[in-house]
Image 1 (cartoon, rainbow over the protein chains, first blue to last red):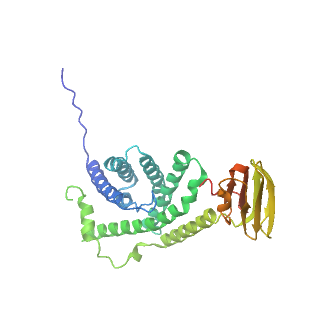
Image 2: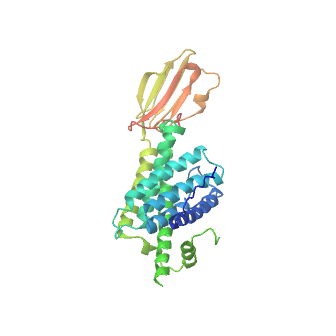
Image 3: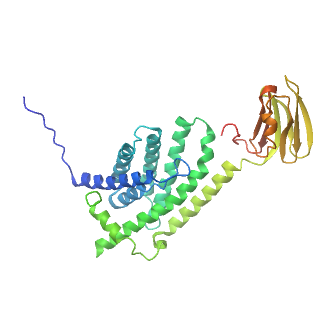
Length: 176
Length: 144
């Protein structure tokens, strides 16, 4: 009986996605240590990585990094399949949908800040809808929406600026 | 970190900090989106938190509305429940349970209700006092 060997070819894409995902997971773990005034209000630093990947390598890679980050990140902080995991997943999926649309915007007028903001709002939107349907089956969750929206506005802008800065630096590094 | 960070990302971090101003990253459309988002956030506060100014008090017994009082003028109203008389006091913009025959007096101690959606419940006497605003979908203080 010959042993069955399954070769999984590893492409350069895989390595790149894995490395960016690792960076995103590191940020997720670091962020989990930060105190938060309200569960769910977080800077979402890992999204900076997702934005950089999106703008440099496209939506497909960004989706990989984002979803792998959610799964592996919650595995690391011991949240896998806990409610927080599904909320993070809902946020990631809805913000990926927003990212898909946002990158179609003319780049001449709309930069990383717009993309980041749209993703941030989609993120809280997805989370609130899931929380309403599943965790808190009452419209009371929407009472918190203004707080989440404020956080999305602030952190979406900051993350977008940081992502834009990193991409700008990448261009300069390439040019020089 | 060398093994973790992609080479180009490490490059980015080492180069970061040379830029002159953050403004250069905000394009015309970004300003527009920022402005609209800010407006959206402000709107969400006014829509979801203001709850509308309370403009009438609703007194119910066993879930049935007994009387609706507008919060425009001061008056006192008595409502009969199984234990006795509950007195509701209304003043412009606010209302309270003035007295209640219930043993623990929770609804009396709640004091003045001012926000739309606020509720005081005198459970032993089956009476509730609730404030309503103009906006229909206001959240009440019970459910949140």
